[in-house]
Length: 360
Ligand code: NAD
Image (cartoon, rainbow, N blue to C red; front, side):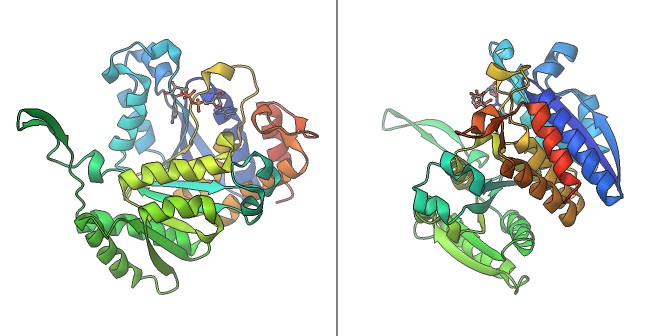
């Protein structure tokens, strides 16, 4: 199979971590008999410096022509004083919009080797965390109309609208069920159906979509309970699917409990356009250019790219196994180092993963 991937390194540690991820992609492709066709594009501060805009048209075109997009990170103090429309983050929002990405997939995995870094109580961490949060990305309260500010009884007031159409709910539920089929076959749909009409519709549609996936179990949970269960018993969750605002909060909570920012990948998917795969962390300008960044979140984003972008499950699993092997060898970048581990740089960690791939 030909894997055509557009790489957007971005700013800060972006170029270092995507360089490692490219090598891992090449290695896994060679191991499974695929060819890789790479294109590169500018985004964020790097694009502002070169072209005056955070998302040049050429980048959008290169992404559209590819089968998947791999992004490093954008932003940094150099561009902090620019007006909002010209800031690096606009590039990120712009590419998500241009590709019509409506589903955000954020796995939160606690690697047993890194349990000490977790914020969870040791007995809870010991049960493991392997949750995939599927967040609706383009609807709900963040985009609903009407929105704005008004005056009520002589006092300022502001309002937003949480609105979802059936089709918007159904398509994100389909993403969640499809993902669950590749995992432990459980979907937990999170809402606030005891209070919100929009949640009652969400629940109805979720129940209807579930009929198409008889092999997957669907449960419903109120969002306040879900926030609590994520820290009390995270091992109970397989796939957690929810609307935009709830997903924004719960995906950060799920990530935070693992305690390892440098380890967490993400995917944003659309209906037919190429998906976007990126680490959840930022451009870490404080450590850029020092070869100390943890490349594993980006390497694990390559695993997601193989799984969700190209449907290559065995190849994705091989990358994830290779990461585990490198960790089991005691190798750690500085951010996840503990007593007794061997601290390595970004490049060396990448080399260890590539070497481990030979055995996966
Ligand atoms: P950050 O995630 O970049 O960094 C937070 C802390 O975590 C820093 O101490 C950093 O050194 C460390 N860190 C992050 N990733 C790491 C890695 N892979 N290996 C080792 N350590 C790592 O968040 P921030 O400092 O709030 O933001 C820095 C810049 O990144 C800002 O300009 C922000 O707007 C941008 N940002 C971009 C994205 C994105 O591109 N998706 C996301 C968040 C923040």
